[in-house]
Image 1 (cartoon, rainbow, N blue to C red):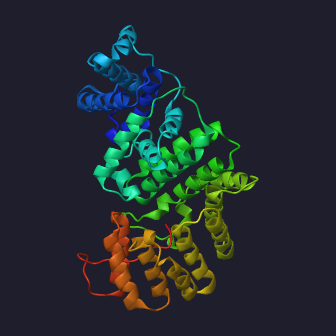
Image 2 (tube, one colour; image 1 turned 60 degrees about the vertical axis):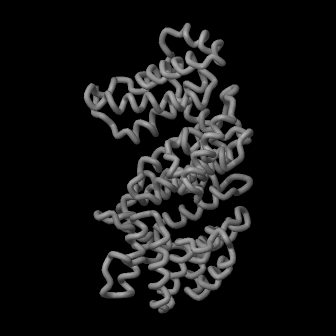
Amino acid sequence: MTAVPPIEDLWREVAPQVLGALVRRYGQFDGAEDAVQEAVLAATAQWPSEGVPANPRAWLMTVASRRLIDQMRSDHARREREEAASRVAAPDVPDTDDTLELLFLCCHPALTPPSQMALTLRAAGGLTTAEIARAFLVPEATMAARISRAKQKIRPGTFLVDVTRLPVVLHVLYLIFNEGYTAVDRVDLAREAIRLTRLVHAQLPEDGEVTGLLALMLLTHARRPARVTAGGDLVPLDEQDRARWDRTMIAEGMELAKLSAGAAALGPYQLQAAIAATHASDGATDWRQIHGLYLILERVAPNPMVRLNRAVALAELDGPAAGLGLLATLDDDPRMAGHHRLLSVRAHLLERAGETAEAAALYRQAAKGTANAAERRYLESRFRRLVPGTNREGDGGGSHAGT
């Protein structure tokens, strides 16, 4: 018996492996997930008093299999499956990790891309329905219904790594990582995204986009130790103590970024990895190179967030007025209407331009628009710096160009 790990770690590290094995064995997704959740609940009740088994995955596999078989027995429409399952005295505990196959299964072609991403985040990434809803900017009830419909639609066949589903898989892993990185206290999600991306990279080591995504995650995650103060407040990228960066992770990320850049065609993750590598390079930041990379990225994958980041780089090259001019082109984009990141970047550039009153107002508005507590505290601190004498309650803040 060992010490009890946090239940969140149990779900994200072990449960997807058990779920993948059950889906492979019994051909059910919805029922298998329910069985795994019941097994996790049983572990939550028993392990604190009895201790964690020597093989937690085998324990969960056994309990979940029994729950699934019981469920199959109670369903008259599944008598044939019940007969086959009842002959199994004890479930096999596979030596392999089925999480990678589970990722690709969740990206089934019968599902729409939004449903593929939501189901993968839920089943393989371990995010809650509320977290996924926040990532997609929809109500939690809407996301719960979407995930439920997705589970009912897919019918597992042969487990395989289907490269036609790779873009969706990579985007899902990117979302998981971002959720873990932007939420300062969710390091487990960022680590899980890196672990899953390593699985994909091991299967497809020659794919430039897979390599680029892994490089991007490593180069970004390496900054985590310097990204927050002891009190949990955000530290902007240009103010971070680089001595606290994880140099081993930086070295691996830089090497992967070089490999990904050598591909015949450049995709969005390769370009973002190149940008992250430029930020991680020793010496002064090469903003001209970063701006050029953002220009290419904007052509390859048009996105308002890419233009927003390019505005920051342009401001470093040609001054805040140039950056503000580029930001103005986003004002009519409905995806950015009232978005706290647009407000915070504009406030940051206005502050640099000396327009402190307008910057303070935007900092305050931006702080009210973010659900991230650490980001809100940072924005509030920017507001208070420009409006001395204000207190914490009711204040709002601005933006950080990067963390």
